[in-house]
Length: 236
Image (cartoon, rainbow, N blue to C red; front, side, top):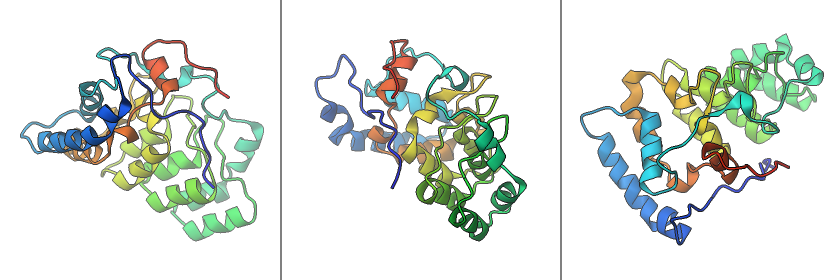
């Protein structure tokens, strides 16, 4: 069974009367328009493209603040002696070599796959950096590993999934379906994951984002409040 993050996905902007007007029937037309924009001659920064989609439907205000991963409390898993001890050469080697059989065997034997080094880098970071969709899916779906992890630079698995030679769309689709909030979370330098994609691939990334319905991309109320400088609710 998948873990539930317990954070409501849909928030209501003050100017909206009903969420159905925005994320119901109209989301298809917005997606259609965005796909036409992608086909245009000018490549668009995918982060700006994402924000413009949400702002055009009043799902984000015009001005939002950066949310830094290192400043978010009670949201990410923190390195513990147990998590660090489980981050050994056997499991990291299996992930780096994309040996799913070995990873399945480790999981069956009870080896913790929710693990990281002392800097917070997890095996999910490694799998995402290598663009290993089948490894990422196993870790999330079968081993129930959380992607609410960050390294000491504030990079989440989405940062690594965007920092690949070729677009790792299969990996990103898995991650966005699980934790879309992480699209809006910045590392220590103030960069969100989409700011790590190669400029040559901007058009492809915008097309990828346009394939999602808007309700799959909007930040949770918790993150929305951080982005708009409202007092966030207490996390459980």
